[in-house]
Length: 270
Image (tube, rainbow, N blue to C red; front, side, top):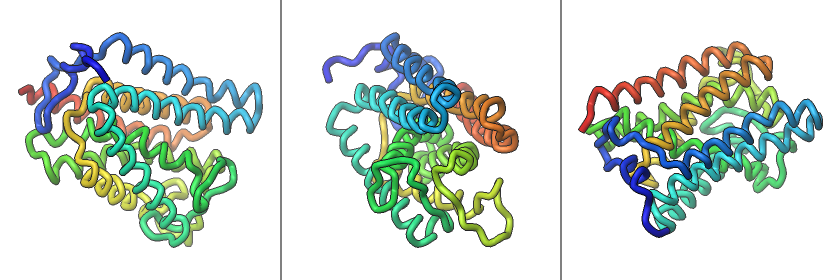
């Protein structure tokens, strides 16, 4: 990939170390993140102008743009081979877990995908594994900061929590957008989402993290992606999508995880 920019090198932190002094994002990465953000915020506009087909296109573009941003960041930090291996494992395991999940009810609870997104493989929209991919590296960055020198199990657990925090936004929104549907049999739910679903997210994230073993994470840009996602989800659900409950709860959960990671970085420089 050639020589990595100095500012990106500074944001690449060895496993178990972090410092706020290394928290820099170079100009090219800033442009990439700004482009992804602009695409993401066009989703309501596409709905207003094109109706439901516009919403479908907008969601797909938002996912692809975020995958592109994460790919840009990790490819420059890791190089081609490591990125290919990490992304390959992530996509395969994410698709397999969703395939098993929607066919058996194991892992996440009983749910099914609609035909809103095509193409599908085994009844799973191909956009779904990409959605896992677009948030796992940011969750790993948060997990690395939270785990600090603990590493190992601490990093895996913290990454799983950081990833699952996002689902407090995601699942109610996807149900609202008719991307998937839950078949619940009563009991305690989170805005209609079975609580078992969140256990499934914790497990799958932990499994992928163990298999990929991500290290030398570029914390600064991945933190930025996590924070921007948090902000856009809160604003979107509160002001555009009519989901004030998930907006507030999701913001509290994801925000608490992000702030805790940021404070740990600042309190434990090394």
